[in-house]
Amino acid sequence: MERKGSVLIVVLWVLAVLSLLTVSLALLTRLNTQMASGRLKRIETREHLESAVQFARYLIESDPHPQSDHPGDPWFGKHDLSEWLPETPIEIDIRDEEGKINVNLASPELLKTLFGILIRNGKNLDTDIEELSASIVRWRGNEASFGTPTSYPNKKAPFESLEELLLIERITARDFETIKPFLTVYSPRGDLSLRVNINTAPDEIIETLLQTVPGDEFSKQALLNALRAALQDAWQGKQRFFRSEDLTPAEFLRKLNLSTTSQTIALSGQLTRFLTVNSAYFSVSVRDPSVKNLSAGITAVIGPSTGRSAAEFQATVQGPAFFRSDALEILSWRERL
Image 1 (cartoon, rainbow, N blue to C red):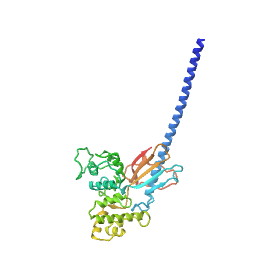
Image 2 (cartoon, one colour):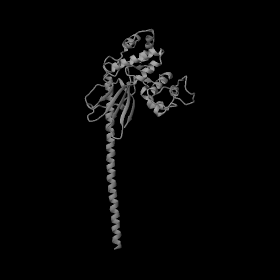
Image 3 (cartoon, rainbow, N blue to C red):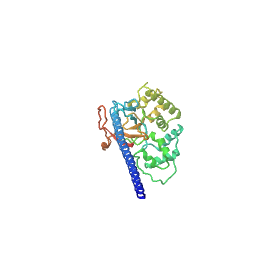
């Protein structure tokens, strides 16, 4: 009797182990299926995002008037890709990199002025604006007339990306996020002069440029007010954006409906030296909001080809055929997948 009881116990233990193994195998199979499904979803998402970047490149290259870039161009702003990528809620936003200040060409005084305007407009900076400006120019190998002397090991070479700002002395992550939308490392090759596209520059940058050129405050404020009104009218379609022929002092004042006095001519002449209407570098932000618990997206910068291969980033858009030249290249690529 005892022997039969022992056998029964062993059988029950075996059955329990087998049941446990069966459940474990089922859970493992389910987990592997979910992981495979997740990998496939990531691959599919990445292909869609890459296709969206290529669509952005097509829009930029298809600009019928590339000599003048502004928010009225077909490439500018947000685009609906439902025609190209059906059933995929891809969001794409194209902006002009040359509406920003090149961090490699800006003087310490100009940077300090920009940061001061940002603070005045309600932005938060943890670091003193003089110390922050001095740290930026020291990193690239220059000196400022202000800031605390330091032995910090600076690179003494140009910034290669904006993220490099996180390596300079006296900067916080919040500082970086605050100043990042107003700075760039891209500008026309061979041009060592700071230039900003007046049609796409934020108001803070236009005011910064105006405040750093010689002239009396009354004339500067009058010019700034006229500029704001002219750009607002252009955004609303009431007049054209600035063209290259508008960037001479006389034409500039005429477009702004300002009188041509010796003060306004001198001031506009100083300001227009920093202005352009033609851009060559564009930032592209693409995201797929349908991916749960993950902000999947790609941020890229597109600009003139430098001879490097961009093959690893090229993808085929699934949809109507379109023309794509090799005039532009993907210069920067960051993805969140």
